[in-house]
Image 1: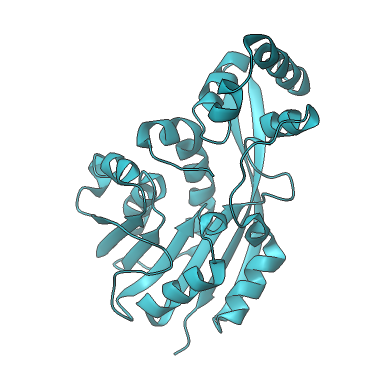
Image 2: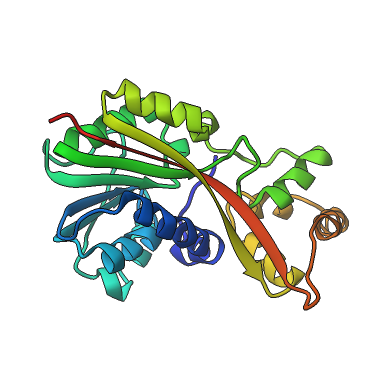
Length: 258
């Protein structure tokens, strides 16, 4: 099972990626200023911070099951006015119609029952409010760690995966949102890129991931070096030695019935 407990490590591996997608996601949502937001599965606050910087919210709440992640989120200067609490995405501790907008950033595949998580999102958003999410295309080769995970699988290793990877498919997201009787449902696929200074930058950055770290820790030094060399061989570098990695995410949004 993948558990995100260390906010600093998450920032190293996924925080930058989350903001890259989050910028496009917020452009697509184009929300008005002054809304009451809930960021469900907020983790270390990477997207929450972007939300606060970009959207001029009247109020922001962040919820996550990891106290370690929340502790990191509370240190972000841009969101010190946000309210963070530990909780379960399938049992939100808020009354109905409490918020104007609810979002999940890179989270829905980690919710054991995505439909129940979405039901809770809809419950806490007012009529006419927005319910939206973005997630890596886990089954379509869109995950930023795929250059490493693919090599692991090719040599017979079994890296951990989220409990509901099927929920990352764009068709599955549309089905979930329409099944929850949300209106004006739209989906979008986007690709983002991240540049690493060199291979060691890429490798050491991703070693912090709870998806990668335990698998490599279980290997002998010789096997770990073999894996590293396979990953290196599969990546392209530019004339300056930089490595550019692409990742693909699926976006979905809908409006609560009025």
